[in-house]
Image 1 (cartoon, rainbow, N blue to C red):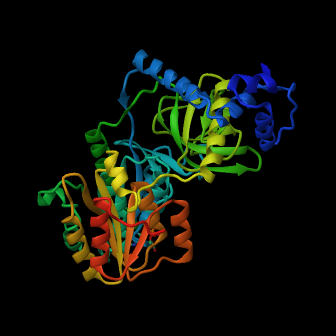
Image 2: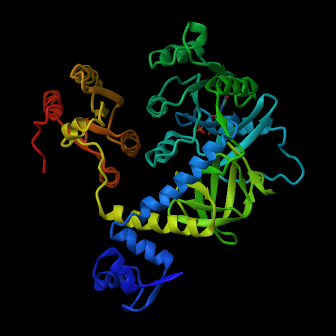
Image 3: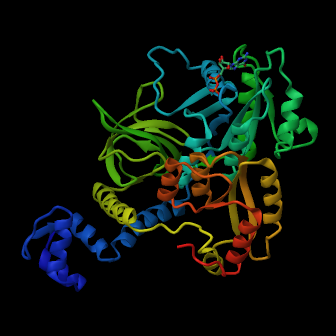
Length: 477
Ligand code: GDP
């Protein structure tokens, strides 16, 4: 299918020269009578604000609606787990110990591949682990709108107790509304103090079940292989409570865990299937790219021809390398896959130039009035602990009927990249007292559009928040 440049311009009621200029912008030299293919025409039309984008997303929307009407059956799916905790508390060791319990471990031909996530088949049931422990990766995904984790396992060393990154991990998980299971690790050590860990975590809203709270605790030694089975059982138990479900009969949808350009296989992505089943030969859209499933490898490096819910799979046959967190959607045919990808890449180029509208104090009143802001979320940093407490209390007291002030995370010391990602993922602002972000952190704040404010006295910060809430804050620039 083709359309001439002239006809395209006429249909859109714009000058042919404008269409030619747009085409040149895409690297296509054209004259008025030249035919352009439909895909290109759609991209140009979208560029002029025509409803192609809507049309295309509608197509996907219709596809989903049809599937929803066909009413597939929701069946239980296995949980997806991320392990977090302070450095050296034993995240990697626990993941290794868990891996060794896999009944399929060491089966003939099964050589473990690093694809970013893996599945463990245990007596209690299957569990998928995201292979990059730590909250930075977790929150980076979330800042792209991706929520892949059902359960966080928080590892705390019994000889060390709650540390900075333990607190951070808790806040990142809580901001994402993901339930936590605590693994009190290194219980084999002489100076292990399990009660101390429980006490410290209780103060952070993680009261153990045996103390009347709601949080599951497991006592483990990754080194001596103690408590690993009971950790896996707790994960299954919590998964049942969460009633994790998916419909394996519909078209697949998932998220990219990691992606790369592979020497032999071209662009590949590890996709965690969240719903439906992915089959060989199907067409898909992933981020700004499209493709057809040419081959699939599981976490043991084996070729497979289908992958259902909660299964991580390396997909080959992509037109480019997507980003971690990008959505993966199977579509009906190649044309649709290409169209959606074209429009998306165009949008991506536009949004690189344009400004995303993220939360900022300057625009707070506006955003409140539009009714989409009910909470002013704050990540707090200060050089001293006292300021944190005093400010947190006073700021939360500023809450009104219209808007609640909520401190997502607080800590002493400088503003970090992880703070920026948390703020970006949670639509929060950052307030720092007597701390200045490094240049690298500032740059990240700019790309993530996070409002970072530095103050030297509590009073000024409170004053700005109060003014912002009633729309009286003077713009800072
Ligand atoms: P990560 O930084 O959280 O991934 O921690 P690692 O898994 O790398 O473990 C840090 C160190 O603690 C390593 O030297 C491990 O051998 C040790 N370690 C991990 N788990 C245990 C445990 O249960 N008991 C003891 N004694 N040492 C452990």
